[in-house]
Length: 175
Image 1 (tube, rainbow, N blue to C red):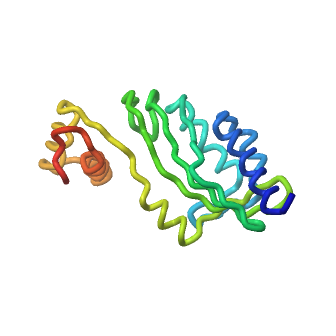
Image 2: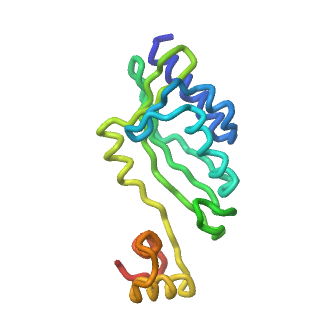
Image 3: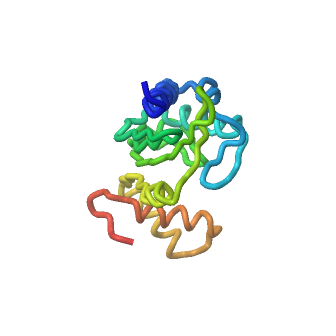
């Protein structure tokens, strides 16, 4: 078995723990520090981001679309899906299905650890991530009114604009 094959196998093992929602086991694959979007983080900080995701989206699943291993690098391109059943980052549960696309570059540091990083190629792919939003008329109207009145904090107006722009429901207008 080649080094690339072993690293691919290591990534697939890590991915099983991701889909098993086992953030403790996921953390055992990280070396310190782990780089995420150019920022060095402690592995515990990286692992701590997943339990809130798993609570809000209890059926969260990453589907591997491609895995490429070359020497000590592994690139995973995958689709994440889940149903929004709990509060997440200040957004109340909607019951809606969410789909995102992701691409991550990993560098294998040891025989059983992955160090994550974003290359220029994956950073470009990550910027193409698109969430599918379907707003009802009852949900869309207050957001549109909020933007027209401009009497809310800038962060809240920005979130409203993003939701409206991402809305793909029938009857939605391009923003």
